[in-house]
Amino acid sequence: MKTISVLIPCYNEEENVEPIAQAVIGTLENDLPEYDYEIIFIDNDSRDQTRPILRRMCAANPRIRAIFNARNFGQFNSPYYGMLQASGDCVISMVADFQDPVELIPQYVHAWEEGYKIVIGIKTSSQENKIMYWLRGCYYKMIHRLSDVEQIEHFTGSGLYDRDFIEVLRNLDDPTPFLRGIVAELGYRRKEIPYEQPKRRAGKTSNNFYKLYDAAMLSFTSYTKAGLRIATFIGAFCCLASFIVAVVYLVMKLIWWDRFLAGMTPMLLGMLFLGSVQIFFIGLIGEYVLSINQRVMKRPLVIEEERINFPASSKKDKKKKKNGKGRDAKSGKAEKAGKAEKKEKESAAS
Image (cartoon, rainbow, N blue to C red; front, side, top):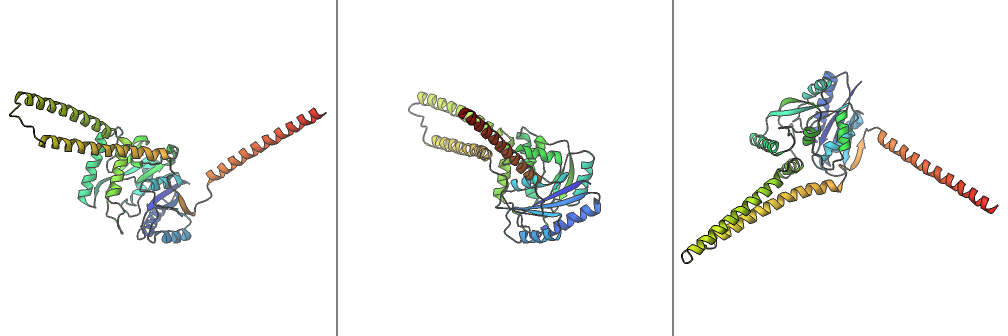
């Protein structure tokens, strides 16, 4: 029997974690009874009653598992890490606030059985703020045009990922993963399932301007060279324009020495313009440097504080066995070397 792992990241979702678990269990048991399943909640250091509720749910149902992060590790690292902890033949990722419809799960699984390694949900419309949806659409189109890699419009990360793709993610060893870009860049043949994004069931979204900006810049710096190229081109254009203006002013001053007054206004405007351009592109280059710095530091994706209902990790056991064999081998070599040295001393003495 194949096993489906359903990953649900959460942060301050005390009103949603229990209803989403019930909805997912109902869908799996009614529509997909031929599959075994596990539900993994990874909590990103919630400050409300989410963790006590998850503990109670895990105690009542051994198929519900929970990982509690030591602190908030961001909206990308936590779900990515949770996917790597799943043990199923496929992993379905969805948010806790019901904005990824539970009804998509059977469609994901049926497409997976057709041979697709990746099945993702694509928003065709949204019941949320129309202006935000339009702005996101503009952003996706801009990234799509600027990126060297195909970018998937209106893809939030919700979907089904086969075990083979999870192993690809495990081997990436990326400390700042951006799943939406990775799916487009490294993914297998995929199927896209359209859906209308419903309103959030309860609670307040944790997304704010800073988090949206962080997501946008992570995508921009990871998959586009356009920022640095634009800086180079604008710098070259401004240099050429400044040179032409300087020559024109010099010629005009030489011809009309007494009548032509350059004044301070053109110089002041030019300095302000060039200064603003320089500051903007220094900041943009700083975003690239920050992205490089985060990757070079090789920090762990997540530090766990607690995990509930997970079996003993076979990987850790294998590692321990391997280390044990290594120590045994070393001690065996040392023992042989000691015996050989003892024989040499006895022969020398005789």
